[in-house]
Length: 569
Image (cartoon, rainbow, N blue to C red):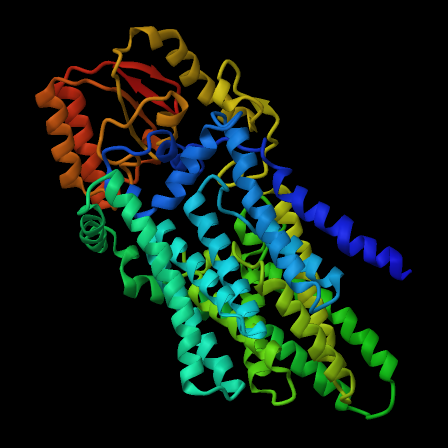
């Protein structure tokens, strides 16, 4: 039996964790975030240097992967980038399986993979998560083993992470763990500062190498100019302001608190039930409470906490918020418990820091947390399991234990359903993804729903028919959340931003770009998706009007309108 369990832990579980992230590489075709990164990699480096520099390491890596066999196709890039998810799951699994039962670490990693909703081609996200995980694991090992070499390597990972995405500088808050563990071990102040110095040296070394590479490839003022440029984006998109990023995270926790409160009240009422007639009808009370749990779930479903439409986030998002609440509570309990080993306290603090740091730098509330549970989920399961063992020794604790198990089981079911069915922005209403776009090498092997495939097929066929008519240095102007056409047709953007719909691309900048095109006499191919233009957004409405004026002034004619996409020449 032990030999069988060992084979599961060392062979079967790792194989599943390696393959699971790659099972959906053929599923879905969409032209926003999935292909936006591909545009950046294909035309790296290009004129729009601010975002190129801010996400430099991700762009360099993406450009390299694109040059590998099949790297010029959507399925090929999904395979290569999906390997980062496999690597994170395996790294966290082997790191944790010695601290908890291997099946528990496996379930946590399986759930974490299932909840990776961001397209893997968005490397600045996945490289961020990967380097953050590596830095956390290396720092933990360095502190436990008292090996400053590993601490320096942790600093290298965090320095590289800043080169991947500028806001990742907040990951340096992991240094709190160095001070905390030093105090726990009652180390001398000088020794603690030596540990800190090792981390800082690694960070500075990695960042300096990256800064030097950026300066040599562009100019030595490229990084300062990028900092100035990004500082102004909060003026065009308030969701990127520091205050908005923090308040959006807080509001997500506030919104989810009602569900946590309902679950807590249900556990409390169940506990009161066991206080009635103490010592009598115990099995009957257990059965009654267990029968009430499905009723509670039906109530939560009816109130909109979750649904069974696994192609969309709402099937699982609030359960992820419940998990985060449980994780935070268990981490605080572990830190406060004087009987817990120092190494477990250190791990709990690191998990708490990962939860707090992950959403900072994004304008997606706590959705980044949902995508970065590789440490959080398994450690929460482990801490919850240890709490269950403690509660078993207490009378009248059955309701609390049953509620914890119920939450864990429902979380695993919902996350698995989401992981098997959901693909970013494709067939979110549950349509079958059974149709391919033909005569397009870059979409070879990829499947989407019939309606989406037919609409894309019209554009692909039109471009294939008229590609020879385009000038040698032709460019493409897109609007309506379709930046992916630049990658699909191998045409660089005619504007200074590859995704001009974004609020980080101001209307005044677009006006300048369009005037420059007119003055140069350049008339790029134009592909629009009017149905996705938000005319209620003042910034986007102004850009749409500027684009219509440009089309009229330069005598553009509509060549295709299939109800979704329009092509102008």
